[in-house]
Length: 492
Image 1 (cartoon, rainbow, N blue to C red):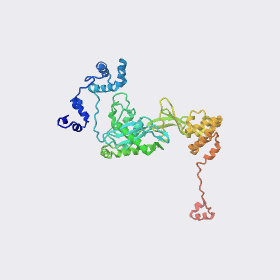
Image 2: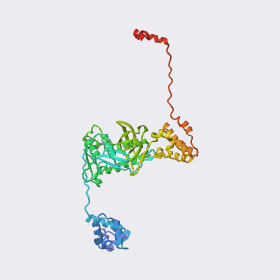
Image 3: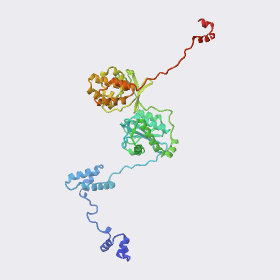
Image 4: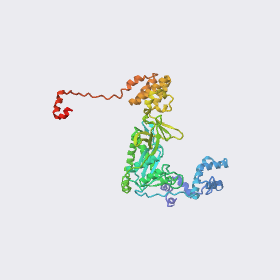
């Protein structure tokens, strides 16, 4: 319109304004801009819920600040049937958001912190939800312990079997500190039950956690309950490092590992790449860390257990089999998060993988090799043994027992099953032997124990005795020694 008033034609004015000539004629005829037209519809400040806003809605959201828009809309639909529909939800959400911004309660403010080098290290456990790992084809349920320096972002991750126990916290923290080569001033966690009793608002450490911090001269701190952002220096990076691990697994092409140790080595490589990106800050922080103590402190729980006449021990509601020569002995047990070290006196007798307990249910960790020698002398005890199902080392052997029990009479089935287990234990051919027996049973053939012994008993060949060639000395050669002997010795 300004261009038109300057003397340009209608066509030129419309082109300069970037509109069509027809629109230009219409605007010139109306004499006002679209933004200057009076708005049609409701009065300023009016909306669909104006009738009930002050008397009904406002008192409700004042009394119940956490009330959601969908629940409030359903309440209004009950009070005023037919007046409001589900399509009005977005309008109500917008109005409630605006009211809370203008008249609602004050919100909590997050105060960003300046991290000082050498001051704070943080620990936390996290669940790897965005990837699934298997160990030799079997799903591996686990946690990840994560330690991180707040200033330099130096990180350490350890695979943890079981829950957030003190053993896992202690072992993970100590491994992190010794790999780092120093200690920060303070150690921060959330309200871990492994570190805090959580019975009151006061600092109430567990005795073991307090001793752990004293050993490394760490000041223990924790965030306020329910305030996860106060633990954000380790909570936030959880997702970043887990995404790194998931993408590294995708590049690897497989999520299956030969052992837990191989999986841990893989994680160490991934975390090492992350740490290299922060090497400058790490180099700045390391000189400000405190020296490590001369030695580590305990990262296990101590208990004892007597070996029963069934050659088992019971630890944390889990039944473990042990070598039968230890029956009647009381063992000292160091309970780690993933294994047990069993001592007879001060001597380490053996180690066992640890099973985690389940509420209200007893679990079993039975190694048939511990029991098979005794069982082979009385194979009929197998059928009704409490440990029968636990003695079978794999699903293949469970199928073998089911087939033998169906195809053979009772005594023969037990004798064959125990004989097969004995053969597997003696000649370390568990997998190959199990598959061979299962193939025979699937064909309807009952395996011959003698034939199996002849075949698999040769897997481990006895050591051959080397042939030694020796020449016989003549008796006359002994006369050469006689002049060297004294007369008294000769007479003797």
